[in-house]
Amino acid sequence: MALFSRKTKEETMPAAAEAKPVQAPRASGKRSYADALIAPRITEKGSYLAETGCYVFDVREGANKRDIALAVKEIYNVTPRLVRVARIPRKRTQTRGTNRAGMTVGGKKAYVYLKKGDKIEIT
Image 1 (cartoon, rainbow, N blue to C red):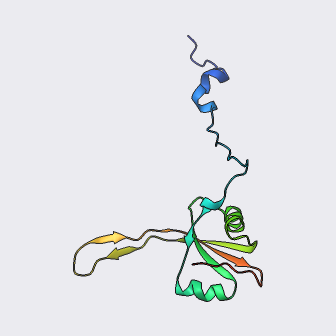
Image 2: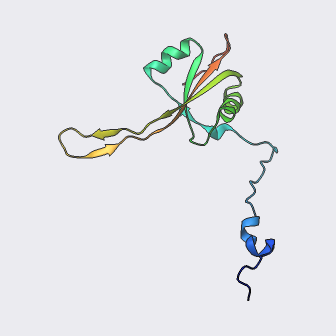
Image 3: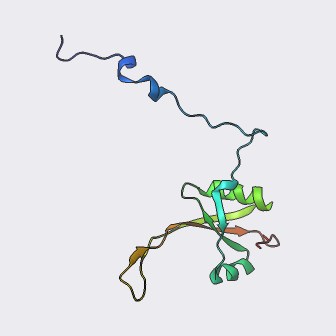
């Protein structure tokens, strides 16, 4: 028995760690980016921005700018010229009249800018 023995690669790396989960391809062979968008964020500020060609969406936590741009192109058939992402922090709330404290749900939102003349119909 050696005090400082060397282990081979097979002994240090378990067989389960080598197998990576593979995402099943869609029937068309393309990946769908539509799940990056949750819903349009309909607020007063968002409606003012929509007049200038900027639309606001709630997006998934793991979505990046590229995924969001491809999702907008896939769903609304318009190409965004700029995507900006902002985090929405959780905030403390308290119900009036009771001693119940809580937290609002945080998340992520994206500002999607379109070229002049392009529009998204949000119903």
